Image 1 (tube, rainbow, N blue to C red):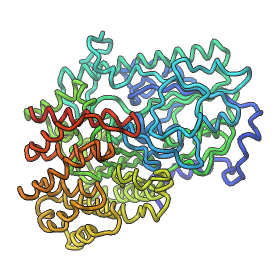
Image 2 (image 1 turned 120 degrees about the vertical axis):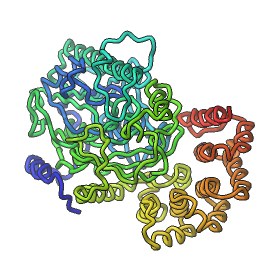
Image 3 (image 1 turned 90 degrees about the horizontal axis):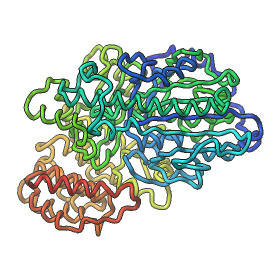
Image 4 (image 1 turned 90 degrees about the vertical axis):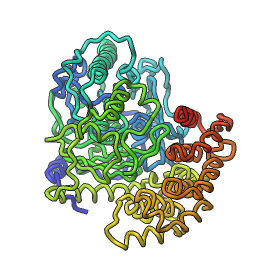
Length: 632
């Protein structure tokens, strides 16, 4: 497919990249004894490009700014996921988390067969690899990954003259730190620039000011590590990356796959001793317009170390010996966020951000326990209920459009949706097509319900299942997901396709057909009531639960008599896997007062549930707490 936007990026990149792409890859061990650069990652949590070197006049970030003056900043870097676990999973693997089945917040799936994490490949090549200290991967580690991963891990523990790859993570700017009270305010709330989607409330201003304070603290942590490096005499033999794991921890940023949640700072310093590894645009204090994202970091580090990235990596090296041609788009994704389900995919060409909402029936601001601990969230919701918000601010508490399109050059806060305007039709179509091609290329398994994904992956891994057309007919599933979520009622053909798909042989196609009826509301559910009722006995629990929601929302009392016992059975942790229980609890809660008797029955069940991994454990308990509060 030819993309008709930002072609100048491709032309300049192709002419600049060395013609080594098609050479046979050397074995890592063959050249491990050669001199290699040290590579240091300084990461911080939950902050965007609110740094002085990015032009933010309120930011106090002297360490990052000094590093940028010696190195170069990237103006367009995305974390791929707007929350830590799937973002870090993408980062360490060189694979999109929605390709490996690891897109859901704090989940755990098996690593793709025959593949390894970045530090494993480096260790095989003779590198000493340390992580201090957060991992938070949604992929099970395929063997020993780090030489050391702990709060004491440090490059200083390596053997003499051994090259190192070291990661130091600062938690000083994490979302949790924005709401610590009491707090000694440094940045002045009155001086904060509020984004257009946030109300001008004292709580919001304090949270944003405290955010800037936290970024300053993270900056100091980076400075301490750089000082250690310099004092050890390693500053001019070490390539340094400074970046954050996703956008700001503020509501409306973190967890939302827009530029506001995906755009992160990236500063890279490549010392003179390794100047041959710099990209053509590199100059001290310079800026790169190249589009880069977390999926590119693993192949880039291998390229810096002198090794051709393996073909299975889905990213593209942007530094080092094996720099690849620049890609025309970056991609992002959102799946389950803690205890709440959603499905969003997005793309950007650097100027426009295109977002495709596959669950437009869900509001942006779904109730997530952790998110509600931030004062901004609570006042924002209260003002919405009191009718105090303007249109841009109120949108967070309403259902989503099917498509969104924003021009970052004129709308940095992404509040003016251009998707329906004729003059942007070509841009929208181009980005839509690019996103569709990308999802097909990586075999995005996120279009399977989470429980269905695990069931289809028995005996293999989600990635390998997703690349087996017999187990996952992506094109058919995606086509139905696209039709179902398009909310197209303009033709009889769409209605007939959804009706026919209710009897499809593939459970994921049936699932999306049910959701298509649910998202279209009472008329669609009534038209195919008999088929939907039959699906309450479907072999797939996910199809059952989806049909229960459609009939529970838009059916009559006789439907509820069938739906509520089914949801109670599926919410029983002694009989079902944890993700099935989560799905049932979400649907039962969404039915509200209709499900009062169901709620009482569920809360009488034992709270304990056997989860396949501790990362899933908190979410059922949180959903039960929501249920208990809703009945007060």
